[in-house]
Image 1 (cartoon, one colour):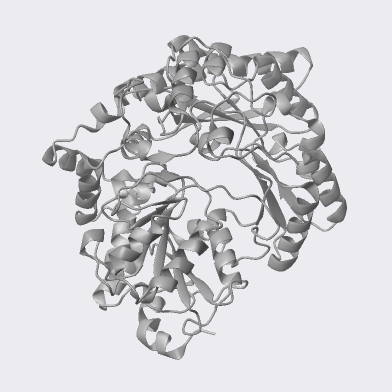
Image 2 (image 1 turned 180 degrees about the vertical axis):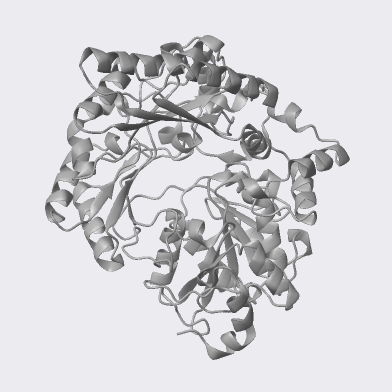
Length: 592
């Protein structure tokens, strides 16, 4: 029930905003714990719109784990849309937490999810709307600790002037440790001394101490997976129950940051996956659940999991969704189990059009496997196929680009040979971004002109094929993503200037002001293209080396050299390739 005092203060602007359901809280499945009874108060902040943030799986985990603790509470806050910001400003009102309706400044810790580099200016605006100083050096004893976690903390330097504490690696245990440590020291020592104490926890990096940090690894147990979460008032981006199958990926595609920073591979047991799925669907009322993983059909018991869940939900109208299938492990049985009675789009990720390029990126995938998987789907009733490709990869030639339409022509040729109707094919084509802690962290990114020429070339080749559609990612957005992800301390000034010039929710194309980026880069004497197109040598010290994910830098460099010779590396499910993670972090892979 929404408090009358809150409605008296905010009711008028809620009535005027475009979508008030983003800002009222009180969703089915929310905890709504008493603010005043909690000893430790944590506010989870997602720097994107409500419908994006409430779908985020990491958000669901942290929210559930903290609220399960009797003396702790976790509330939520999302980035309001621009119309709501204007109404808050016009009425001189602060941002507020969804459930307790308390001001952010009243919490002990505010934890931002840094999922995507283009959210950085939004973080600063949310701090401003919460009446909290933007710079961490200007915060006093009355201000909460500002924390950040998520994949972007793999290089915390660009945000190091604004965030007090960065969480490195898995957040299941470390967030609670940080909160409990903070409340045990609050009132006993100054704020900065508390931050120094927090830096001693494994998985914590603090700019105040400028320490190095080693990532935290959590095991996948029944206790640390939510079986309920707040159900949004309107359709969200991923409007379904989510069950995490496994974490990490032993394929080690050389451009993929997620596979390298989430090692070692950890799988959930079949019985645990089934139990979680049943409870989550029951508690949420969703008619769909997703089995989440970087590579779902790599799970050693995926067919048994799907069979048991399909049997349980037979004739119930409850369906499963599975992320894109790997063609080398494509199983028609899995495809049928996942689709049920539906024959929706099947998604396959070749990533590159030629075998040479797939060997360079370590895809461990042949053209025969891609074509075989595609034709098997067509034969069994799937007439919509989606392919994922990446262009601008290291050592790429125009012959490699030609391989993309040639691969589609090969699929069509196979269909003709077997008397099959051509499928409708959509190619989603992204632009390579060199990411920290990957073998391709040393590589340069193609310039905008180079990418635009490649896009033009592909469009001309595509025109000869009638059953394919190409969707290209915005190359400028990819360049800015690389600019942030490889940045040093100078990028903090750039982010601050963006914020001062009203940059906000920039992950949405309509909010991206390229002229503003150009003006700021000139004023600060920063060349964005020169930064992103730089190639690093083995011996250069990289800004993000203060963060230890366990993978040896020499191994990453050797993988980069193997890429230059189009030599593949065997997946670590098959054979240990001595990347260093298990030895350095005293851990091991866990297969179900």
